[in-house]
Amino acid sequence: MPPRITTALAVAASVVAGTLAPAGYASAAAATDASAAAKPNLRACYDGRCKLTLTKRVSFRVSSRFGITRLAISFTGRTLHVKGTGPGVMSEAFLGKGSSGSVNDIGIRIVSLSSKKAVIRLVPQR
Image (cartoon, rainbow, N blue to C red; front, top):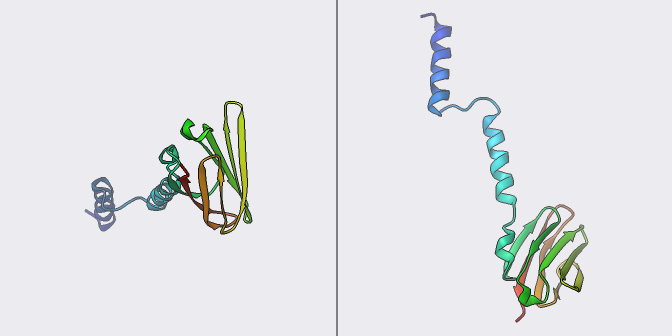
């Protein structure tokens, strides 16, 4: 066989075997893994105890034992806005960098805050 065909066959065989990824495949897979890793586990916050790293606003359910059933969290580089709602009730807190507060019986502490990312910790207060 001419050298070009042998090289093409070797590359094709390694792609099929999974040892050589096609061009652009590795970066697409890495981007998918990074976005999956960055997605916060909001279900873990149902009991009012979790640490969240947020890159955009979120809304999730919480136990009714807190007097609310849903938390909505948004942020800017300077302020974190946490709004708790439930049947006939609404409670909210606006927190600045490095501060803490609460919405009903869920304590909120800002670990870090920027315009692109907020890291917060939620802790039940009862």
